[in-house]
Amino acid sequence: MKVFYKDVDKMGIVYYSRYLEFFEAARTEMLSSIGLDYEKVEEKGAMLPVIEAHTEYKKGAVFGQDITVHTTIAELPKVKMKFNYKVTHLNSDEILMTGHTIHAFTNLNSRPIKVPDYIKSLLERHMNS
Image (cartoon, rainbow, N blue to C red):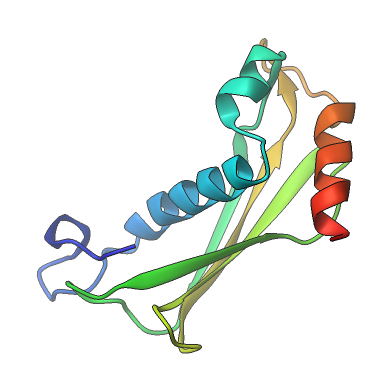
């Protein structure tokens, strides 16, 4: 991702809340890359609302920088799914920030449900490869 002017504060550093938007974009891309996009999940009657978000800022990204948001799922979900994030400079291991989001599985009426079997099996295939 490129850091645009709209992403930074008066000091030219990425505004803290923008990282949550970066997380969302990276999470959506990661899920889509394994064949699990939000539209299909919702069509099949499930939702994944964020119920917790955590960020730790190490060093601010600045206007014009290219960054990478590394996104992983640490363990197979049961009723909640945790995504871990690490933001680095493009082509560098320098960590700018880390964080995670936790998502509940709900039906379309916002009632908690267990992870649907098709999601569980898809995640198992990709986490074990």
